[in-house]
Length: 339
Image (cartoon, rainbow, N blue to C red; front, side, top):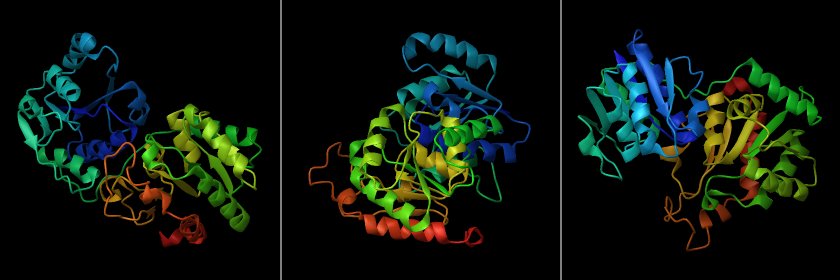
């Protein structure tokens, strides 16, 4: 059986979908597994040991380049195309593959169900990982232990991460934590001054070294936070690829950040996370393992879809530095055998 998985974006969503590759490989060890993805999210999948092929789908001029993509996909002779995303673009990729069996979600904001031959039940009250795994179940896949998210990185990425720490004057023997203060939407951001207070408290109390991460666009924000700190901090935002970021985070004892790609990279890299949630629901998008912790007030107005909060952003403003510090300190002092 030759199976194409379609999840074009974004980084976190592709990571949420990554367990499906392991689930299919466990049940169908001789299957040929491909994945269609946009360029920005491709590093999340390239190097995944359960995949045979990653098709990089152009984001710009998508429909103009669709015939060329169709030729590439049809050369692989896929039997099944699973569209996890449920958008016109992703449905078009599944259709272009020529796979005689096209599967898609039974709920879609863009109402593209008519483009599929089979609909997979999507329980929107369910966490997105088991929701995606429903596609594997619909194909007859079974597993004894639920597959985990996977973020590929190797020795070369670890070497680069260690080199960056060395250049920043951080001995490899240091206890490091990684802090990612920015998210993709301002409403999901915890106030920047509180990150400075949190980093100061953890460094003073536990002698950890806070490493700030993010995209190149987040570098100035991280500089501003470090300037507010009374203790030293290291800004590595924008200095790594996604795979190098995963390697860097894997060297840390704890990751702290909001609902954004690096949070999900941290989980997939095996690092404990303290997730900061407000307008989005951690029951649907947050960490699932008991070794992780989530700061979330579960207010009546949350989750919400506002781009700008009309009532003063209480879901994030009311998350105190003291509460996050206590949780982080507890996580950093627990023996690893306890999780």
